[in-house]
Amino acid sequence: MILLKTVEEMRGFRKRNANSSLGFVPTMGYLHDGHASLVRRSAAENDVTVTSIFVNPKQFDDVNDLAAYPRDFDRDAAILTKAGCDALFVPEADTVYPSGFQTTVSVANVAAPLEGAGRPGHFDGVATVVLKLFNMVMPDKAYFGRKDAQQLAVVRRMAKDLNVPVRIIGCPTVREADGLAMSSRNVRLSIDERAAATVLYRALEAARDAYDLGEREAERLRAIMLEVVSAEPLARVEYVSVANSMTMEEIDEASGESSATLLSTALRIGAVRLIDNLVVGDPM
Ligand code: AMP
Image 1 (cartoon, rainbow, N blue to C red):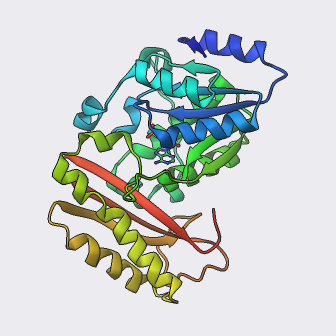
Image 2: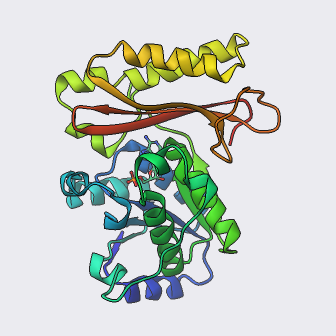
Image 3: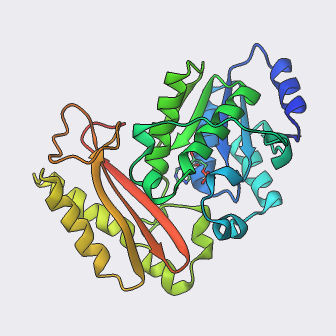
């Protein structure tokens, strides 16, 4: 795996591989098997795979969360090599945002509720950096986790609206044995908090079980999730949601016919904000 530190080096790599299909996995580092699964998929589907590690300051609404974001370059490089990554792109913040930078990509409706409502400016930061990275890497396909379902919907919308010549591939959420979705933030949980964090998946599973038994009333599904989450004293609920998985709009009925239904929740456990989701009905 080669290391690319500047936009010029990245462009040089792309030129040398101009006739190869290129798969791209954007990340913020501190990698786990969820990230590795995206890299493995890209390596299987493309001639070359590029992963970026860039902790994007513009998508953090909370300076403490940015400062506390874990970093371990050597471990990340070893995981990527093993997963089949060919090039690791690690641009510096001041090359991504040189002085005088003043352009923002803003996706409207799909970015507004849920994570967009709870984290002002977050999706502007995501859409802007993802478009910039697409312009630097020029991938044929880009791989995103369904763990961040709204991010996936925002990126799809942005790429479509702006005619970006890239195929966006959504990949399944990788979980720990007890159901907790893998996340770089999980290492910040204490032992008690880590045990409490299983409540996200338990709440989603309870709602999915009810859906599987025929419950379609969204308010009832929200109530089921809320009941599970409220029983966990270490968890503070930000939202439980039953929404259309493409538009992110809250729905009344989980019909599962015109579009899949996204069950999702965001919680704070101690100082850590965690999100998770499950899709019922047609897959995204
Ligand atoms: P991040 O480093 O958190 O920005 O994540 C980089 C990419 O990895 C995003 O597309 C995430 O959705 C994806 N990702 C993060 N956690 C998981 C997971 N547990 N399973 C699958 N994909 C994930």
